[in-house]
Image (cartoon, rainbow over all chains, first blue to last red; front, side, top):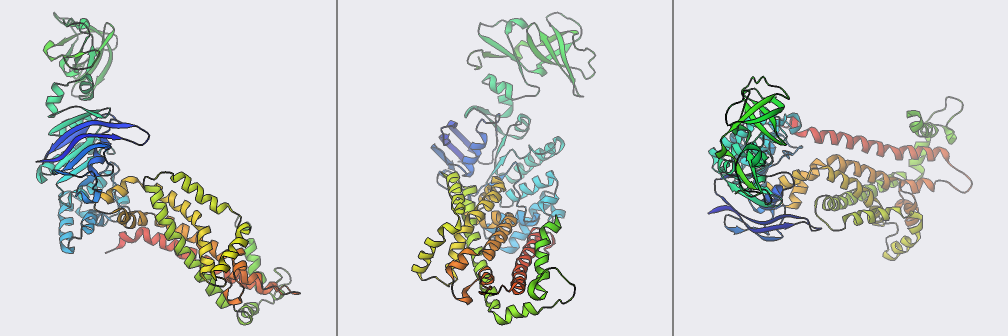
Length: 337
Length: 254
C-alpha cells in the first residue's frame, strides 16, 4: 500500500494564487523520494499539505490509505526536518530530542533509552547538555534529524534540510541521510532545489514546475530521458545547452532544438574530421576536468576538456560528440521528440 | 544623561529626609521622621498593599489575555488581523479623562466603587492594547518553523503555544508585565475617581489627597513617593534576573 497519495490535488491561496494544480502522486512505503524544482514551483506547499499545515483546495491527500484532509498535523504521526532546523532554543539537546516523546507520553526510562540511542547514532552523545545556540550548523542539523527520528516515524519529511550548510558538510549529511534511510526503512520525502542532492539521494525524483509534476522516475532515467527542456535544463551541472541542429550538422526537422550535456561534448585543440569548429569563450578548470564554453556560430555549447587545458578565450577548438547522445525537443512546446 | 534622569528622584529622596521637605538648603538635620509619620498617621501600609494587589491582578489579567490574543494574531491565519490590532490601539488613544465620567457611572451602577475589581477591570482594558502590541511583535519574531515543528512533534495549537512559543517569548512576557505593572501602579485619574474610602485608595490617589486645606505636607509626600517608587525598582530588578535565569536554566540543569 502507498504511504502517501495525492488525488488530483489543487492548492489555491487566498487572493487566487494557484500554487499546485492536478497533482496525482503515490509514494510507496520505504521509498526515498525527492521533490525538486526551482523556487516558487510549489514543492514546499506540497510538503505542507502532507504535514497538515495547509489543506488542499480540491482533491485529497491520503496517508496509509486514509484521507487526512481534515487531520491536524499532530494527529498525522509524521516527523519533519526543517531548513531552519527549528530547534527549541529554550531546551538543551537532550530535551530537544526528547520533546516529541514527552508530548507522546512515553515512559521516562524509555525516553531516556531512545534519546541516548538516537544521539549515539548521530554522534551527539557528548553534546546532550548543550543549548542549540552553542552548536555549529552541522550539529544543529544532526539534532533536528535526531528529533525527527527518535519517534521511529514511518514517514519523515525533509524541507531543504541541507541548504544552510557549507558544501563539505552538505556532502557528509547527504550520505548520512541516505544511510539513515537504509537503516530505518522509513518513507522519506525530501524537498530540495539542489539537483545534485536529488540525483544522489533518491530512489525517485519528482520534478515540479509551476505547480504541476513535470516528470518523475528514478534519477538516472530522468537524467537520461528528460521529457521536457525544463527537466533537461534542471538536472545536471554544468547544465545542458540547447542549440539549433543546423549549427552542429545534425539533421532534424524544422522547429526542433537539440540539447547536449557538457559531459557528452569533447573539446579538442586540434581540428579533426567530423568535428564542429568553435571558438572558446570561457574556460573553467574544476580540477578533475575543465569545462569549456564555446561559441558555435551564434550558438553556445559547453564541453569537457582534460584538466590542464591550454586553450584560452578566443582560441579555435573543435567539438566532438555522439549524435545519439543529443536530446531532441520541440522548440515550441519544449517536449521531447 | 544619568543626572537628568535621576535628578528628580534624588531631589525627592533628599526632600523626604529633611523636615518640611525642602530638597536643598543647610546641611544636617536629616531624619526618617517623615517616613514614620506617613505610616503612623495615615493608612499608608494598607494603601501600599491595595496598590500592590490592584497592580498585580491587572498585570496577570492583561498579560494572560494579551498573550493568548497575540498568539492568535501572530501565528494563525486570521482575516482582518491588521484591523483588530489598529482597533486595539484606538482604544488606548482615548484620553482617560474623557471617559472617566461615563465609566464612573458604570462602576457606580455595578456597585464597584472602592472595590479591587473596580480598578482592575478598567486598568486591564487600558493596559491590554499595549501588552497586545508588545507580545504580538515578540511572537511574530518567533519563526513559524518553530511553531510548525512543535505541531509536527505532536502538540495541539495550544500545546505548542504553552510549551514552545511562551517560553521562547519569555523576555517579551516580562517586558509587557513590567510595563503593565508600572502603568497600574502609577495610574491616578481612575483611582481618584472610583475610590472614596481612604483604605480603598491606591498610592498615587492617596498621595494626591495628602494635601490638607491650608497645608501642603511636602515632606510626607516626598517620603510616601519614595516608598512608592521602591516596589517598581524591585520588581524590575526581579524580572530582569528571571529573564536571565530563564534563558540559562537548561544549561546548568543536571
